[in-house]
Length: 419
Image (tube, rainbow, N blue to C red; front, top):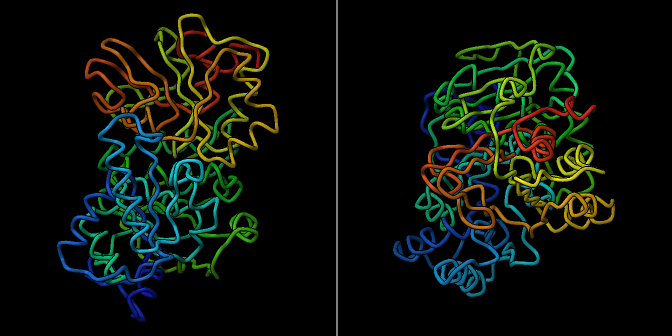
């Protein structure tokens, strides 16, 4: 069996399962946010559930429209707050304690290797970086799981992606996953588990792995997953709130497809409008002027991402024609960035630093685009109207390219700044 099949088998009480099988499995953690939880709460009450199955396995993280941007957003967040209080939920994260959900839960040790996690948010697949099976589901599935502690699944087929070779300078997890999506398309892994492996992955730090698994959904994937190893152990050992188990894939496991990539040939990569799969080498896009740069999100808002952007922009200024918004993904990342002087670097460069929020990524707030404006962002989606006006454009990149472009006033690469 693959790692995905083993985790699903263990959670459904079966010795063995195979792709295509329908199973009921117990969940280790359920997640919802200020957009998706209110619907789940409504359905939970509608089915007459008396209580949640486990008060410490339901996490509500208001992060999309928070700090609350208007009356509707405030009402949404109030629903989470009141439900959490009424049902004594142990994992409700109010503003000031919250962060972007997919950065917060791994950081807090609430997701561990071997887990089965569902979340009413498509980027729940992020946690596969820890060797967990994690996937996004609808709010009604969350409602049923909150009541029963279980969810149904069709066991996904697995695709294997093997990465080898030395990464070029400034190239990281974001470039690898953008390159991969560019290769297979936005439906190239439809309802499949994307298993990332190879020497490059084994040397990839945890933040790069989280970025790769985060964007599995942008290729249509049911999940992204990386077999846990010493880097995983190093990350989880000091923070895990529960015991965990490392699963691996058998050498004779079945994969519907296997693809290999020579990473020495992968350049700094940018996704052009209006699909994550519309990728081009960043260096070829030097004629694309931009109005806004966003460094943050559940994809690239971790401390290492901020360090990378700060390294590029230190001692420089954001181009006068550009506004740059930096969003640390959690309060802890914000504090660490402050202690390291990263926030000083951004503010001295005339960028603005925001409280943790998903804000601009989904066109929520804190960085909406006007008609005809163009943004380069370290986020994960660039569909029509994703970040504001339907006639705006979003390009996706890693933090180094984003920071270099903020200085240049157009899409560019760090080498242009002598870095």
